[in-house]
Image 1 (cartoon, rainbow, N blue to C red):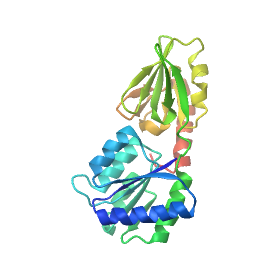
Image 2 (cartoon, rainbow, N blue to C red):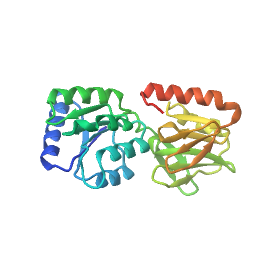
Image 3 (cartoon, rainbow, N blue to C red):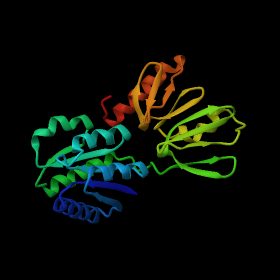
Length: 245
């Protein structure tokens, strides 16, 4: 289901945007989970548990500006669709550090917001609810693919590093790592960059010739022989998402 977050410290602005989005969803017969946040810190806390497909952010807010909030969201999620809605046109150039899909000036024109939502939804990755079943020593864990940062093969088992900092260890596997990971690798967001590692490209913060740095600071090696193919695949991924690295 589509998930939308609105962050604005002005209650009336939250109410207006909520009304517009509700009308848009009703008109287009769309279902969505919509949450309002009156402070950037509350939104950042919520993201730790569950990310959103679309973020609508004010810029002038207490403690953490919408500019910093947008950059932090982008750091955590390369797929996020960010829309700025503000009374301050002078921050437009700085806002593009977060690669927003649009920069709307308040009072927001309803049709302009509708057109922006249509574009954002067309780019949003709504297939991220896919899961993978992991047999552990004492249970069967169902893990959302979007929650996986990387998978590491070690001592005939696989360690799943998750976005919440948890690590899930599989039971000993009989097949080789590539075969075990094949259902995950069918998802275009995942790439095997080394004999022992699969990474979620959505969680990449830095790309170098010998490694990926993932969210949380984890560094994953890139096999030297695989570098040209890994580079090309990653660049194709960024271009497809319209993200400048």
